[in-house]
Every structure is written in C-alpha cells, then in structure tokens.
Length: 555
Image (cartoon, rainbow, N blue to C red; front, side, top):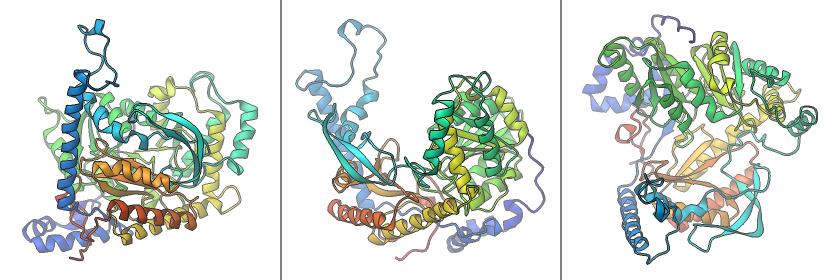
C-alpha cells in the first residue's frame, strides 16, 4: 500500500551504537545502570543532537494511599445512593428504561454508568463550560449554576469577562478574530461561501484545497500531502486503509483515542508497548519477527509503529531518534501523529522531526492536525507520492467525507505561510520562539513553587498533579473564581492515582498573564495543599508507564 522501507545501513542501529557489552553492564552493575541511564538521557550514543530532559516525579506514598481511600469512600457512598434510588428514597436522575421495556435487552448498562452517576456527576461543573468569545489568550465564559447537584445547569445571564485561557490548544495564537488570518478568511468566505457540500472525489475539490496540500508538503519537507476535514477521522479512517488482516500494529499505550479506534477498525493484530519505552518496543519487534503470526507462524505482512509527537496528557515528547533507529533495524513502518507537536516544536515550528534534526523521509506516514497551532480545523497526512495517491482512492475520509470549508482552508494557508515567513514578516518565527520561552518559564516557575510537573521541559502541555478526587473539582472551581480557565482531568482518562490539571501554553500569553496565572496557581496550591514535590525524581522503571528516564536527585 505504501513504499517498502530502504534496508538499514550498517552502523545505524542501537546495537552497533551501544556495543555488545552495553546490555551486560546495565544488567549486572546496578550503580552503573543508574549512571549510564543518566548519560543515556543527554547523549544516547549520538542519536540525540540536544539534551532530552523529561521527568516524572514519584507519587508520595501518603498521597497515593489517601487517593485510593478517597475513591473507596466515593464508591461506597455511590452504592449507598444507588440503593436509595432503587427504593425511591432518593430521586433517580439517570437514564433508565421505561417499565414496559423492562423485559427487553437493556439500552443502558446500569453498572457501567456507576462512575458517571456517583463520581463524575459531583464535579461535572468543572467541564464543558460554555465560552462566548474567541478562544484566544483570554476568553469570556457564560456563568451557570446547578440546583440538583450538577445533573442540570441553568444560565444566570452573566458573562465572566477576561478569563485567562490556560486550557486551549492555541499554541501559536492564531485563534483570533482580527489580523491577517481573519481578513484572508473573510475574503475567501465572500467568494467561495462557507461550505462545499461535496466530497473531494465529486464536486468538492477546490483550487484552494490543491494549494493547501502543496503548501503542507513543502512545509513538512515531503513529496506529497493530503488534507482532511476532521483531525480525529484523519487517524481513525486512514489507518484501516494502510493495514488490515495479517498486519501487526505496535501502539504506544498512551496513544490518542483516534489512533486506538483506527487500529481497532483496521482488523490488524495490535500489541501495546509501554509509554516511550524503547526496550518494550524492541522486544515486541523481535517477537513479531521471530514468531510471526499466531498459529500459522507466517511473517506479518506489515508491521506499523504508531506514536505521537507530544502526548497531550503526559506532556512527554516521543523518543523519535530511537524509534526511527528501531524502525530501520527491524524493517517496519512508522506512523507519526503530530497533532500537538506541529507548529509547537522545532526552531521553525515544523514539529518533532525538526526538533530532533531528523530527515522527514525516515517517517513513512506523517500525520497532523490544523486544529491547534493553526487555529483552524481538519488534519493532514504527508509522505511519499505513492502513499498519498493510494490514500486518495482508498481512504474513507477522502472518498466519503465532505471537503474542508474554504474559509478554514484559507485560515490554514495564511497561518502556515506566516510560520514559514512567506508573508514577508518574522511574526510566525517570533510566535514559535515566544511559545518556547513561555513553556520553559512556566514550567520552571511551577517546579520552583513545589508542584509535581510531568513531561518534557520543551512541551507546551504542562500537567500539574492533583491526585485526590476531591481536589479535581476544587482546583477547577477555585481557579475560575480567580479568572483563570483551566482543564482538569481524572480517572478513567488518567491512572486512578494520577489526576491532574493540564495547562496549555500559547505564544499569545504575555509574561504579565503568565505571572498572574502563576500567582493564583500558587495561592490555590497552598489552599488545597497541592505542593507535593520533594524534588526526588525516580527512574520510570518504577512507574507504570515508562522505564527509561532518569534525573539526578536531591535526597
């Protein structure tokens, strides 16, 4: 379906870089294991051209125990309230079947909704808050109240003005209602209208779509590219076109739901490797090649590795140099999702490939979205011309989905040209640099305050650990009281003891905005006792997700 990878050249593998004795030393000498892994972070045998600093601090034991106790208490009260609802002591607000349908196959699985009824509903007010302005550096939020414990909401008619937006993926600040992008989109709207009302293969292929795809290919440094109307569908509908029965998918355990859905729809066998863990990935690759398909032992038709550039819940960056080295060594394919990294990483915003100084040709399928750094909608896939030509006729997103809206296309074109410097200014380059500065400053200040922060120091996604379920809702509410809009995340979107607040930095954030947000975060952190950090970072070998990162400790 897409071109076979070139044979791996000698000396370009992890084995040849580290030598035969490397693994022996690592396994037999614990002290040297720790020291060599620290060196592995910074130098990594020449694979990395820059320091790669990524750390996850250990969850304090007392906090972990109290978190489990908190969920246990909530669960017990949940069963008690379900008992009271069953006997009509408490009003039942959740969806249930009518009496005349009791003997039918149930539409609602009662136990599966237990978490939603009894845990999520308590803090539901911290999500889905309606915004009535451009999602820029500041937003206006419609105030709402609930009189039935968050089952329903009533709008008060009041608008909370000037809330500092620390949750949107507006990395480069192009989500705005004025400026060059807005003017260009308005001009195209007056000429082409708002919708296309057809798919690309019928009457929906505009000259603007062709222009966009050529620009995307040039921006990425690949032969060809194709644009799609929805970022989620770019993954979920194209992966099944690339692999199928008899193929093997190796997927990072923290991959986005769109990648997970696409893998499941493909019909291919799926194996999960630990997050950003190259030893886990290499073991799966070895096993796949040695054992082949189950029962028949025939070789897999294709082996496709699925990874993301920036993982939006952990704030971590993929170890792309190592992934590419393994991909070449074992003759597999690589699918890279740059939804969060395109525009946000690299000296000129060209994503994680540029961030590591790698060749785009080493990535077989380069996927990304226009919904974040470009302030628009949709997604793209870039790669060899043969790959894109194949997808034009075999991808469900290309054949059946409606084309991108012309004003949206123009928003992408204008913002991308701005990033590339083709608008005659340095504004795009300055936005990329400003985002990097904001990211490092914000992360450093939070760590200095004593919060536990996850992820890579260059990632604009900044998770701040909350842990306990009661503090999820409390943090979101307290921050909104102080005119700061944040995103809070809990189980099952995260491990049960790793609830967090997730900040997303933007080039549109001024230093004054960040200082204001930091001041309020510091105050709320003291109020809710969230400063858990002991500045003792542990190897991810002891953590559920990863086992490759180390930093020096102060203890």
